[in-house]
Length: 306
Image (cartoon, rainbow, N blue to C red):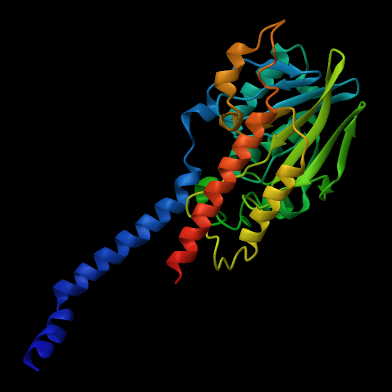
């Protein structure tokens, strides 16, 4: 037919080749932008936040957007998360303002192997001599400077200085120092070795269960279906929900202040009044919301594959 002949001829004109080339480049750019979105630092990540005692020997020494925790013991201190290189002076200043010494950091832990939580680990190790302890499934990522991360390994902006791990942790392992014990719970999905930390603190005559949540987020660009780099990602998220629900929680904390309402709760932290960070209901609500978001995204991706 004449129409078919003309359509075929038109499809191969130089103009159309140029058009398809431009469209394909735009698509590649959009995909690359989505992949890099995580690597764009939020301004509040490096915005100072007042350091304070949460309860017992547990202190907040992070920025407005990135959470860091100091656990003080008679034998030195434990620091959770190293964050970005730019955060090191902020973390050090917060620790010193509380009356402790940055150089007394004996153990460095992380919530998970993403650059906003572990990029400065090598620097902190060098400056303090701290022993770096990381969950087994995240070890290759931190020791490669992010290059083996299943999602961001090829994203230059999310890479960082590699750091040698001194102790490889496994699910349920305990980290002890000066009478303080933290338990590492594997809560995978966000990263393969994402770790939720639990401990107990004593305030007055009461003992509280602390949960420092690793991350329940499904980042933009995460493939929950047919993910060749992380085939069991959806199953790992399901495991995480089960673990999080099994943990007794009085004091709810996490890798970002936004998880547990840092900015809203901090002004209410006053001597003699109820501690706003004691929030078991807030913990349950947050886990419920994040699990619902996960299932909605999973259903969306399943539908798209049909």
